Length: 113
Image (cartoon, rainbow, N blue to C red; front, side, top):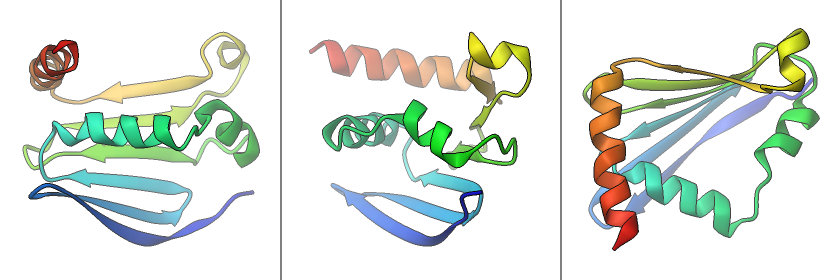
């Protein structure tokens, strides 16, 4: 079973990302929701394979990634258990969906430029 502990602060321009790892939970606190694209670019630049990482964690349903923003909206990613895991390995729970749709729309517009 994987156990992660630590904290990391990343600065992008004048915005910050706080990464906290405690046991099997990784929490990203984004000072601005547009930092989500910076996180995705970091994962892409480091050539991280999230699916391989999840396999390395084992079959523990306790592992989760939580992304939060100051407005209180969250995205929680956990590994599925049972038969749906083969076709849909990750479970994604989003709170305040209209807020995230608005942010994703802005990110998409920036990405297309």
